[in-house]
Amino acid sequence: MQTAELKPICRAVRRDIINMTANAGSGHPGGSLSCVELMVSVFFNHMRVDPKNPKDPDRDRFVLSKGHAAPCYYGVLAEKGFFDRAEFQTFRQLHGMLQGHPDVKKIPGVDASTGSLGQGISIAVGMALGAKLLNKDTRVYTIVGDGESQEGQVWEAYMSAAHYKLDNLTVMIDNNGLQIDGPNDQVMSLGDLAGKLRAFGFEVSELPDGHDLDAIEAALSAPVTGRPKAILAHTVKGKGVSFMENQAGWHGKAPNEEQRRQALQELEG
Image 1 (spheres, rainbow, N blue to C red):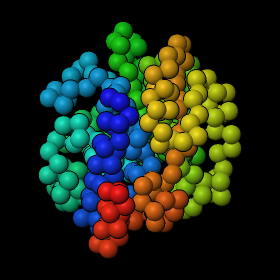
Image 2 (cartoon, rainbow, N blue to C red; image 1 turned 90 degrees about the vertical axis):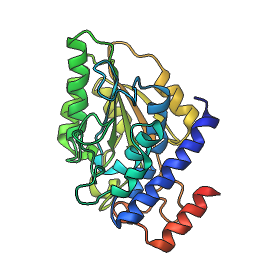
Image 3 (cartoon, helix red, strand yellow; image 1 turned 135 degrees about the vertical axis):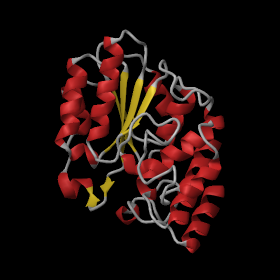
Image 4 (tube, rainbow, N blue to C red; image 1 turned 60 degrees about the vertical axis):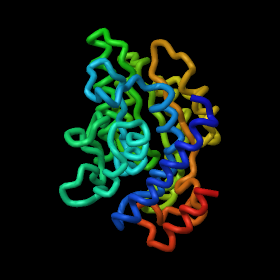
């Protein structure tokens, strides 16, 4: 799909994020809004998946390592046709299908249950290695948070990915610069993240604007042989909603009704 076709999907997903979190009165809008373009690009232009056959053994795989960004994931899956948008009403509701973090047992299109930060990337590495051992052409994509990247397990997974030459693995890092306690650089600085990824054996594409669909497409399409790929996307937490942008306070806070209306008006504009 061309950029002009993807932009309306991104807007729709952002509206869904706002509505889901507002209806539930809880959730994580900030980090969900920051990874919309990354996830839309992967699902609509790169992943081999069939909503009518979500468990196809030959499908590509996606792991949302930063599992709290589930509202974005659910919006993309619904736009792709994995389930009806009416399910959004169950977000974070008791016995509902769409819980606060993805559940592989309940949700069509979800390949791994995630939420405990640092573990999703390890699952993705295991999937990519398994595909290699089975001589399958399966590709594995994952989105990792920058705050999550302070976890040691993330770097153990990166080391394994490079050691096993997992060129079927693409790691997208949603580098919005903020986490629940404030700026990453104040909580636990990641330093030269691109340099560290290269030192760990990754082919790295660094995107100054992680919302630029053309740049994302170019990075995802670039061929890599013999090593895993990392896309370090510099994004904006709360992207698209003026009062949420670059505000750590919107990491895990739902908008009230007035804020919902303002956010939706901005997204429509």
